[in-house]
Length: 152
Image (cartoon, rainbow, N blue to C red):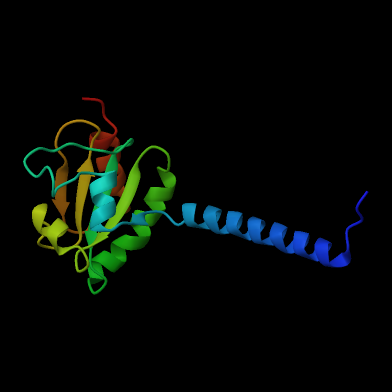
């Protein structure tokens, strides 16, 4: 029978602490709300607009809302905490994504996001709806309940 040396117990404790802290970080990120995605992630999670620009083929497993925003935009900064809070409220029912138009110009141009914020509501079937401008929490929830989550 092997007896653990104090050094081995210390290592075991450090490994346990590291695994536990990574679990806490994952839980914290899940609670943050909307996920910021790149153009490449958009092509994987939502639609491959580069290889299939003529036809809308939604790749998601849940309806989605994409917030086209810019860091310098005051209405975008006002919408951000609302968008994140509603994302937490609808977690598991709707995916919430954020796309920075300054980092993803081709994506913003493709979908005609000329002003920010612009929200794109993506149902499981059919074409997405695009809403330019700021939305209040109540307007966002109304759109989710009466457009996004309504069966066609």
